[in-house]
Each structure stands twice: as structure tokens, then as C-alpha cells.
Image (tube, rainbow, N blue to C red):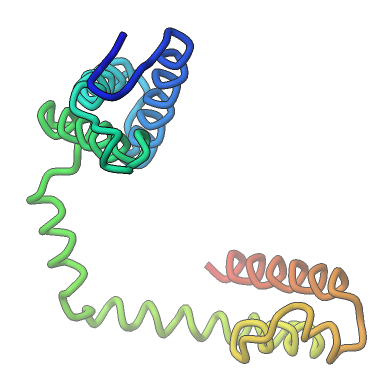
Length: 176
């Protein structure tokens, strides 16, 4: 089979079909869709791949997969839009406007209470755990630098960090 300046055999077709399937899987996951749509999505991708095979021009110096990827993925997304499986624009607009609204009095109080609970939970940690959490999240130090300052191994710091986060989580859940 000769499609313009591209020669392709059955083995390469199989490889390209697997490639289209993997793109379909990524598109399905990125839109949070159930996998029962996969066959239709793959079909739209294969149609786009066939068009790409016809119009691809090797003399342009662009690798075929680079040329075809956006076209195949775009065809899949177009299919999803056509059948109404993507998020509706009005919903997106609503969420955008909802995010830009000033916080309500109740949400400000909620945030304030959460901060107070976190401060109490943090104060109940050991001083060493407090130093590790503070150095990591507020001072921006790496685990390795914290380990050097504490004269311990990096794995010890990781274990202390995990333990401190577990204690904070438990304390926050108990205070609900």
C-alpha cells in the first residue's frame, strides 16, 4: 500500500492501530468517561489516521507520528463533542464564574475554623516533627537538607514526615 510518500505494511498498520488505541485510552481517561465509548473513539481515531496516511508528505521533514498525533486526538475529541460526552460549555462557564465569586461569610468562617484545628493539631506534634513539617512546607527545604540539619538519614526524615502527616490527619478527623 502506498499513501503518497509513505509505504506501510501490515505489521506497521497493527502498530499504528495500537497507537491509536493508546491515544483513545488517554482521551477517555482525561475526560473521565466510561470505557464503553472506547470503540467509537477508536473508530474516529482510525478514520483520522487513514486521512493522515493519505495527506502526509515525508518531504516536509515532520515525523509521521508527530504529524498524525494531534489530528487523531482532535478527531476523537470532535467525536466526543458531537455525541455530547464532553463537559458542556455552560457548565464550564458556571464553574468559572463560581470560582471568581468572592467567598461567602460562611466559607470564611469554615476556613478560619479549619486553620484553628490545624494549628491545634500541629502544636500537638513533637518539636522535631514540627521542625520537619515547617522546614519542608514553609521554608521549602528538601528532605535531604532537612536530614543534614537534623543529622539523620533522608529515610528517617521521610518516616518522620509520614508519621507527622498521619498524626495531623488523625487529629483533624477526630475534631470533625
